[in-house]
Length: 185
Image 1 (tube, rainbow, N blue to C red):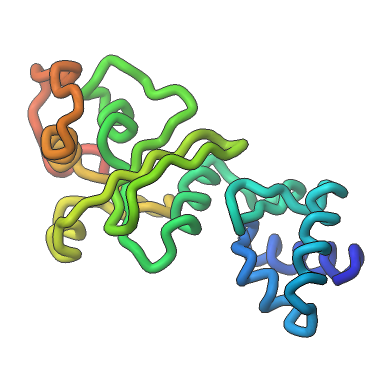
Image 2 (image 1 turned 180 degrees about the vertical axis):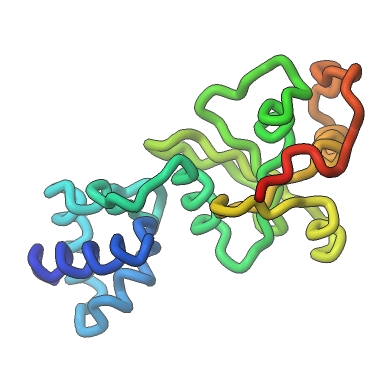
C-alpha cells in the first residue's frame, strides 16, 4: 500500500460517509498486501497521520470531512460488529435530563457483545453486556435518524441502570417516564 493509494481510497470512502475502518476493511482495499507488509504499512500510515489508531485493529480517517458529532458511536458500533449495541445508562439518562450528572468524555453502551472499556481519542466507551433478547431490545430502544447506535428509552435506561446495579439514587423522579421521550425524526 502506497501513501497515494491510501489517500485516494480514503477520499473515496469519505465521499461515501465512511471514516471509521477496521483493519479487515483496509485489508479488503489492498487484497494483495501480505500480513507483515500490511502491519508495517498501517504503522507507517499512522505515523504519517493518514490514519489514526483509535483501538486495536480500528482506525479513523482524521482528515475525513464526513465525520460528525456521532463519531464515538460509530467507533462503538465498529468495536462490536454483529452485536446489538445501544446508548443507555448514564449517557442517555443525561441526554433525557433524568439525572443531574453529565458523563464527561465517557459513553455508556449496552451490548449483546462483551463488556469492556475502550479509551479512544474521542472519549471512553464503556460496554456493558446484556442478556436481553433481540426483540426486547428493539422494543425498548429508538433509532434516531442520523445516529449510528440505537438509544434506550428513558424507562429502559432506568431499568438497565437498576439491572446492572448502578447508582439509581441519581435519577430525578419528578418527570413522567414517557416511552416517546427523545424520539428523533
